[in-house]
Image 1 (cartoon, one colour):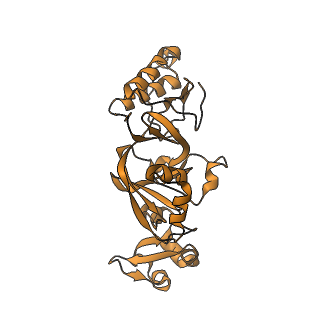
Image 2: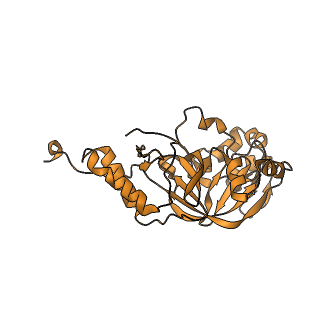
Image 3: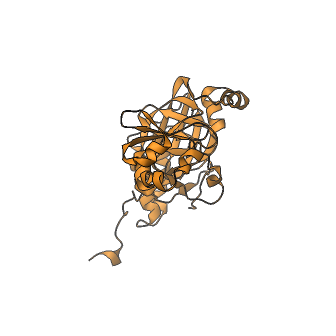
Length: 283
């Protein structure tokens, strides 16, 4: 069983029960105490509370695999790599809906990033960073602060908001989901991370996707050229989907591909449990 990032994904037309049965059938074929056995057990357990949609549009993000698959009537029509949260900032599991596409998004920096990367100190040591990257700064009352004001009294700062455009960390697209304002799918300005051998765990919890333009066009049922034209004015705006699209973001370290192979992915968040204890490990 090979580890494979971005392998073709299984059909979901038969529903989660069929996939669970497929994964379970592999259990007797692996060493009972192996890592593959632990992956199978975890994935079958994860599937227990889910309901895959086999009609209409449906999106599945496999966090462990770093992949997103778009389905129509249970058939995969688009697949792409995804970058997920670091182990200390796990991407959460959701069963929800994609509600809208935001073009030319702004980015309000999570305070966890502000703390971890010492942004308040950076206001004093490298204030030009915020000018170069087009950040506006606001105090606790929501009032705009000048860079000089913020640098002089950084502890008044409560928000860093990055303007839309080529410097924006979210790129040109943000995909809003119904269950969270803090977690969403988005484009990225660091597109090289999909191709330079970077790990799939780079974010603070949101999901960066490889093909945001194609995904936006699919969700909005428009051509890529139409979507591109809509972003050219640089204005930030949300476009609601005609019908919300169900999305499941979950964690499967064992998952079938369309060739009938069971793929075993790295347990990036250490969720697996030992399948059993080998005789030599027993006291």
